[in-house]
Length: 453
Image (cartoon, rainbow, N blue to C red; front, top):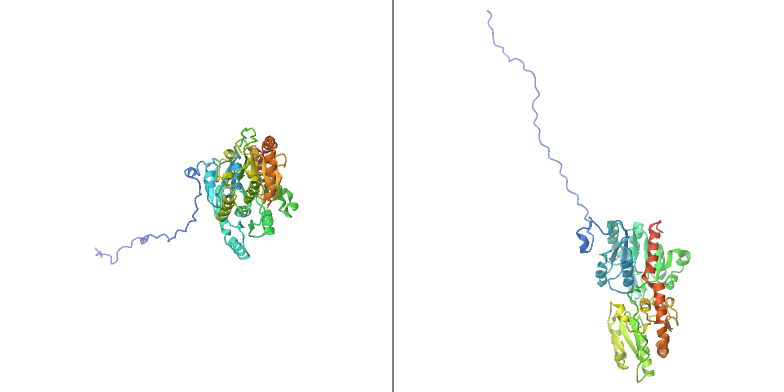
């Protein structure tokens, strides 16, 4: 047998792929991008817990009102009446304040109102300005345009349908509406510089009128004399300008029956700021004339409801009152919220101001059944008829004011007969229901057509 030799090489094996070792790959390093921060809405505490679950403005028209100041002056009182009487089932009102004050807290109580804050753009001044200060005002206005951005965030956050600026003093609402392309109402309650020297317009009279015209879907004026000051724009587009008188709740100012007391002193009432601009001193000067005419029994007593805004003016008036021994006949009551209580027992509301665009104390007095004695100037000339609802005297003329008071004191029965006339006019022309009907018609018109921009 042949020798069997072992193979010198091992038998061939089937080739197999070499095993691969999987190396875990690290995910690429991705740095997180900073997310834009959204400022939470500045809402009253009663809304914050459920602001997005069941907001009170759901399925309602949303109107943003721009209020320039939180102090309860005439413009703010008119705004409050508007808000109180807008149907809460149709409208929700956002009110953004340029400055804080007691009026902010007062509006926060209303169920259909959400109060907000922003910083106001200053383009109107209420003090005398020289050329250097005016230049600084213009530069400040340009630098503060960014104050519009908080309002833009508010409008986008709450899907605002319309912006209603409550005064000429505020410009930021108009710019916001222009950027967003939504309707804007500019409620003009002021006279301009040429009529009111203490009312300083940063951009000047002509440019201010042009800005109001170009940035408004509708310009609402509190009197026809305010409307006429927008020449020449009002002639070019008269439909854009309309008169909407301020209103008063006649039910809350129901006159109290009081038989005329022909023997008691005539009770005069003044409502408003005690300042030289309001010409309050004309009343005091008239009382000085009357004191000489009635040296023994003085048949007048003045009740003053308002506050001083100038310490030097206060000292001057106190000196005049003391010098002529008028202290028993002039009572300073300070600012009062309850106008109805202040009207009780009064015979005449006196308004000496010569630059009033309207004259709110006039319609409040008429609603309470009290005739009016006012300077024959500005908006008051549209509100009542002399001899039927009250009397006019020459502007800036304390002597003529004194003569009118003498005439009224000698004709007490005529004054008593006017009471029914003033109440009837207040209910027919100035009741809040009349204003609300016109205002809602305006909102409907603007929200159902293409904005005028």
